[in-house]
Length: 92
Image (cartoon, rainbow, N blue to C red; front, side, top):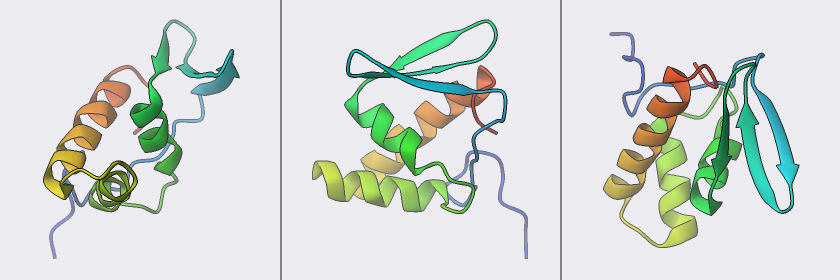
């Protein structure tokens, strides 16, 4: 059995301990010591699914169900967001 590659559909992302999450004026912000991201509605939904047990595929399937889009598109969007957050130290 092979190990899932980072940010493949089989990868299980988790939030980094250094990442701070705050709701401000109805918007969700994710930040570390040097950078903050304001998440839109879909990005917030994706980020809230990152729990250290769900795969990117499972997260994408939840997004697809919530927003009535194809699973392939939802998984691709989830991969894109999580890759960006990982590159900036918010998830791993």
